[in-house]
Image 1 (tube, rainbow, N blue to C red):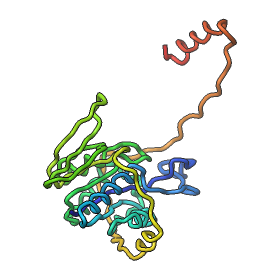
Image 2 (image 1 turned 90 degrees about the vertical axis):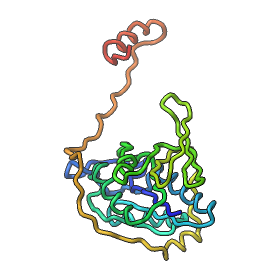
Image 3 (image 1 turned 45 degrees about the horizontal axis):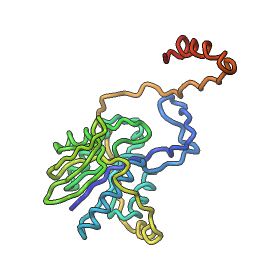
Image 4 (image 1 turned 180 degrees about the horizontal axis):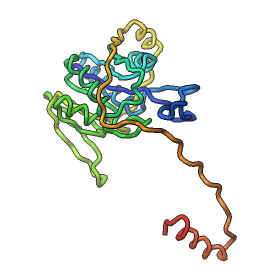
Length: 252
């Protein structure tokens, strides 16, 4: 089975974000870049399926700047076989429509039996690329899966329903699945894997800009949180507290 896993290079969750001088991007200075955590579940799922089958190939695919080779090498060190980098210095400004179009074009050449993605990237939290990718490829899609089993050319998956109940689906392959927390526990790369990753191929391709549906006009940080205040002590403070919650906070 040939499995393609789409990943994204994102700022670490503990990064201090600053707006860039252009007003439409983040300042990359002193930012630590990582694989989007939900994508790690997708990588681990692909590796487990390959190991269970005793063969196959796992290809990691990303759209990003040239520096994204670091994240690709991490996936190769975990056990992936090869990687493809769609080089785009402006990848961070591409919307989900443009990103899915560029990924779909590359996947068309990879003869994938299964495409896995994280349910969303933690930088924008839109959760749209997986479904748009499936639409571009003309493949069935199930989102936010937390269990996965491949049998007889079908993916048997489970996801959480809107009311908290479990939903199960049998999906004919090839298909696109997006992965969420609970599906597995991503492995760490071993020293042997890190050394072997240096010899594994990364296919770097230049891509032309794809038309998107959205244009980023500006970025701004949220307003600072106001300092708290003490309105009184004991039961005497209750009426004033209720008034403030009703008239100022408007939560009552």
